[in-house]
Image 1: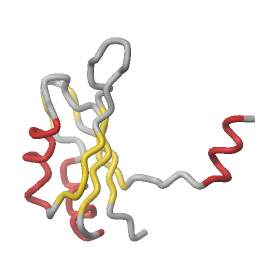
Image 2: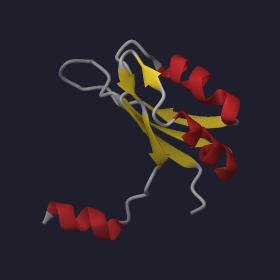
Image 3: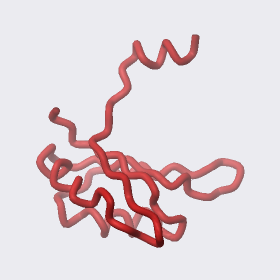
Image 4: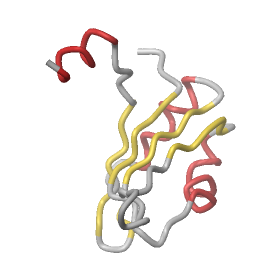
Length: 92
């Protein structure tokens, strides 16, 4: 797999985009951090998608898997891109 994007779950609510950038920037240049916020509560959803400049950086960032932050272990995986076919099936 040649993905430049990782999925990170169990991010503490106290973390913002800057903290996520700081935590993962040692693995390579980060192009984008998607850190969704709940529209009703305005709280972060506890997960993020991080896009690196290259796939090697994304692979290296997997080292953060199982790292404990505020009593929760991070889940760090290569992000699986949704294909249009999969999106269509969920709607039907």
